[in-house]
Length: 121
Image (cartoon, rainbow, N blue to C red):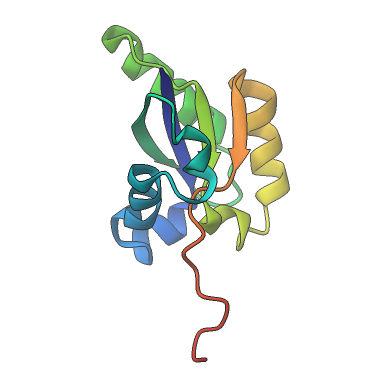
C-alpha cells in the first residue's frame, strides 16, 4: 500500500489555500499527479508545510512525522510536492533537493492541476 505525504508552502497553506482541499480532492479523485494511484491501494497520511521561508526546517519537520508516526506503524512511501511550492516558492529548488536527499523515498513534484490558466478570462 502507498502512503502519501503532501508537502506545501506554509505561507500559502495558512493564508490562501483553505485547508489544502484541492490537494485532497485530487488525491481522492486520483487526478493530476495522483492519477498514478488510480489502480493502486493508497492513503493520504498527512499534509505538511515546509516550515516557512526559506525552508530551513523541512528536514526537522519530516523527522517529526517519522517520530510521531512510528508508534502508529505508519510511514510515508511517497512525498508529493504541492503546486503552492512548485509554482510560487523562490526557494523551491533548495527545499525539494533537501527533501530528495534526506527522505529516502520517492519525491513526486505535483499534486493537483486545478489552477485556471488565466484569472479573469
